[in-house]
Image 1 (tube, rainbow, N blue to C red):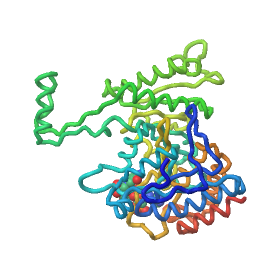
Image 2: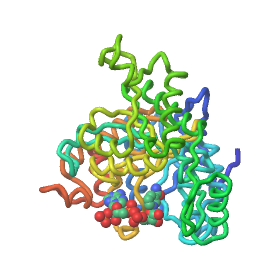
Image 3: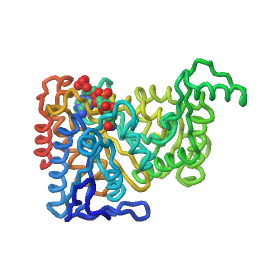
Image 4: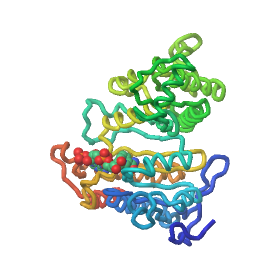
Length: 418
Ligand code: NAP
């Protein structure tokens, strides 16, 4: 393994996380690469890192410690290396396996379409995992936000995000429209732009497999396949069918379908140890998460549905400032803030670091450092209950005290000890 990445030396006192039989093997001083992020990323990373280190210290008293290692992408990478995503950054994530990042500016014009999409594709981070859970005291637009406690597994590499599109008026669009008409007998208006939506058995099934495994490992009892298969039968509808196939063929001893549940021998009662696998059409699911959120626990869904649904669910429990995320493959885990760089607040020390903090909670859980994860989660929850919050929550929370990003981190650190 190289001693430097992007010209920076690897921390000498740390070790790399390795993987064995699909499980991370974590040393007591793991080297974890981080990208601080652009715009407000600088403020929220600084604050979050202090909370992470304090929680690890509080939980393990020096026996364990993260050796943070900065890697670069986005504006900072472009300023330093004239590259938005240096090869060394990708190489470091591959070498150290687990990384965390703040938000990145999407380069405008030419080159990389989106750094986040590029990272997902290069590292084949096929599952975008977004837990959505309510923390008491967070202002919410719904009457019972506490009913929502679910985790979304969004397919991350296929669907319309595969990026096969042809602009209206180009020879390529005309050629494809001609091909559809002449070879396949399908008519598309001649003045259309056209896009292709690929969804494969492989891509869909590995995502659903990950969702069901998560349900088994975390004692969840419902896995819901969310799709638009009533209209897009051979992509979204196939996703549903392939998902049920995985449930039946690979987890048949644990999973039963909704059809089976309401027939003998179950007669509507889910036996202990079983997981109900059901499916919902995407538009209906958007109603269900508002009206019957309690009924859903693990959601597996194709890329575009997952994009919309994750943000809509996050809005119900306090918005993007509080929504964590992870992009996972079977080999690498990249934890990330789910919001953008909010450039108008950059370097003002005002933005809510909740998204990176809770992504850190996910990261520590994945490392098996659950004590540190709980300390951060409880410290954050307690600080919000004390109504000591950043501007975004303060403006919605009567009687709250508005804290700067750094002050909010201080308050969480104080609360870690409680
Ligand atoms: P944005 O950065 O998410 O900000 C939109 C608004 O959301 C902010 O003005 C703010 O609302 C609120 N917000 C976002 N993060 C918040 C936080 N931590 N705490 C409190 N409020 C928060 O979206 P954008 O302005 O559309 O995108 C800016 C840049 O980020 C673009 O270059 C975009 O491509 C990029 N982006 C990156 C990622 C990523 O790296 N994962 C994701 C999305 C977008 P108020 O103004 O109401 O306070």
